[in-house]
Image (cartoon, rainbow, N blue to C red; front, top):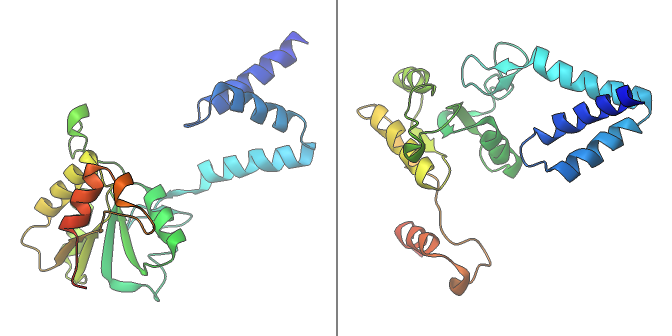
Length: 199
């Protein structure tokens, strides 16, 4: 019995290592897996193995891909003149779920974090500059997170693209639809005023 408890404890620890999963949730997940039908649990483990063995960064945009290029880069229906720069693959997935953007992407694989001492090294900036230098894009959209690190990252990207014949824009920020002014914080109001447009 001690050996089985050790196996379950390892599974709990593995779930607890995931971001956003507390110890209690990790225990619930582990016991859910424990009481799953065997074929379902094996399929779950196989799905994890397949992700780790078959996915790699797209050689063009650094999104996740099963082959050399991701589905977005390989899709000729996408607008080949628009490029949205995001920090992580999960940012790309969020924009894709919104369903309003039909251009291409470039994933930086991180962000600049001045307060943590993280600079631009390790980001895919050289590949981004090389893509933009080919002259196919008319606009580069900076889709970094609307916070201090995201702003620093956007500034670094804009500086690296300086002199390229491309319009550089930033995703709008500010008040969300249905939000009241009294509930907005200072940063939201500043962004809302600076990003205002003609009525």
